[in-house]
Image 1 (tube, one colour):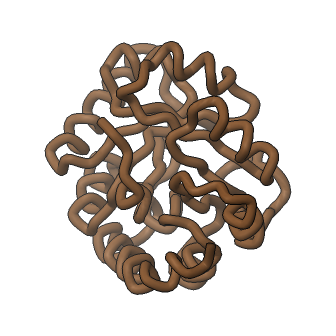
Image 2: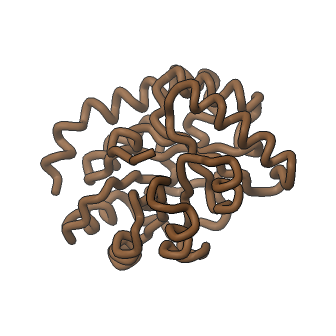
Length: 222
């Protein structure tokens, strides 16, 4: 599957430790609300391993396919190839971008985390399809995050002429999503703003409305 910037509008990330309800139901509700891409991130205390992880990945992948939404695997390149996921997202501490691209091939989507201009340039040069830039704001969801960057880092990346799709990530919710899009992001990546919402569908709808309302403005920011 080829990536288009619209896939990043509402990029939902979730694993079994990120929600209080059955995550299959949460994902389906979120997709009904307008999630445009989903990343399976099975990390943290109590996360699934081995065959349990594979089984869950396949179940979530099936749900995404029924909505024709790209299904991305976080870090686990072997799992992505095993179940024929639509793509992989890797961080700066994982396998190099060029190595992952060689493994997954040209047809799968490859996303890379970037925290500054130099990391963004390196990822683009090595073959990234999109950048996950952050953390935008403080977040409790990930314990291993870098220092908060804020939306200005997206402006800096755009100022350097980097035009590939960018999704902002880290502590984004309904109150601050607009700032991220106006800085030049194609969309927002969220975990708890949807996974812990009382109504994942309604929360997704509100987030997507915010992103789409600002599409015209974003095009003028870089």
